Image 1: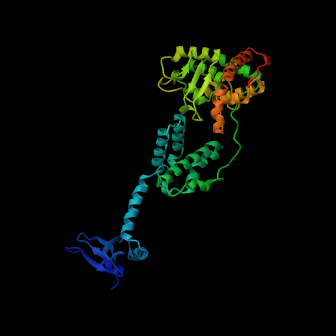
Image 2: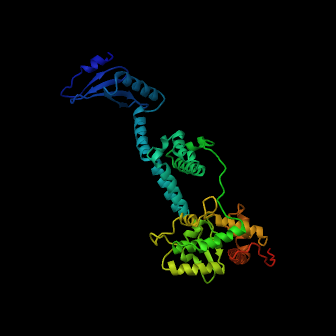
Image 3: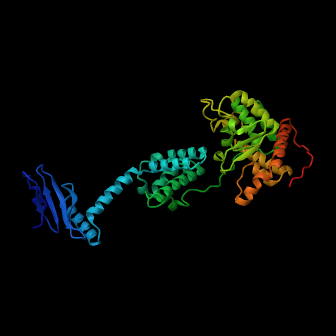
Length: 408
């Protein structure tokens, strides 16, 4: 006889547990403590009798228990043991709860570190994680929906920091693809967000390109009255025109003052290829001064807080602001654009030599391997020419004539 809610409510505990049947294998198990537990008795595909727990009354009402019974019987009809399926679901839920976005992202970032990614790249990815951690960090990665990801990066788009929004979204996608490859997420939901963010044209990094204004900048740098290490970093920046991260993380072990060359390890380079920088007499003079300041430390330009760390990534930009140059006029990265523009405009140097000096990666791997060594002598000459040219601009000359050079 089928159960009713009124009949269930009047059931009393006994000295021993007992069963009260409903229909189609469903019954209530009444415990001595007064608990009323829904159970389903069934036989699996090999005929073995099994039981499935469906919850406790009154949390699970009679109607709900019957619906759970019917669902389990439907599962059984499909050749799946509902008790075994329940255990699999519980295990998956435990795994899912442990695999939060933050947990998977940290494993992914650590893999980047083990794979030899540049430390700057690793730290940048840690920074991206920090940007979205509050929004989705504690969510099981398999449960995260596209709208949640979009909500986590929208504030940066609304602040018109489109690059930050796009690069953060790109990082989230990298974590999801790592999760998919490791079977902890079913798919990468960022694929559904293509075109969702604004794509305003990115601004070019500000740089001074007019020779007369370059001279004014160099004279302003000479008058800088801040920290000695900052002044020397400012002076070296236009002479070597490496990326700001490569400059501030320069180590004395990488610099051969006698050989007049600075060899930046592949791990520090954006293109993951060692980069040799020829040092002009002027660059060597700056480094000799720096040696008096930081020669006892690991870094050429150490942090003012601790010599065990390199100079902050904002130091050179902050110094340019102190000199009166806004972010729309000149940036630390702008020294590269300055050198590229004026070296190309001089007409004295091959485009390949300039590209190699800037450590721009050649998309043709064979051509890149060939060109890495072929322009060294030209680059050595170009480095000295460039340093002499900057000296001339610093003195106030606008047009300088140099003897023609021919390079292959």
